[in-house]
Length: 113
Image (tube, rainbow, N blue to C red):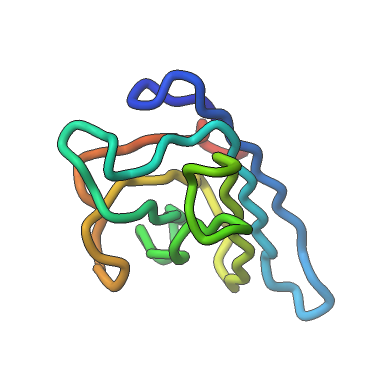
């Protein structure tokens, strides 16, 4: 994943099936700016998954090991879903518990085959 909003940011996605035949999704992002420094400023980053059978779902907040992006600029998320991911993307948001992504997409993958 690369970003047009935060040009230095890079992300890596690892998707694997677990023993229950669910999809384990690991997101690892580096060189991601503090969300408050974006234009317009935001509070946090959320990871989303798009699937053909279940639409777009909020996988959760992208977290850093220190709790703040300003020190190490790295973010991680681990999620599990029964639905096959078609695409994963990161948005900058003001709240974590929202049902649909906002317009500020920071990172996105191409569609998975």
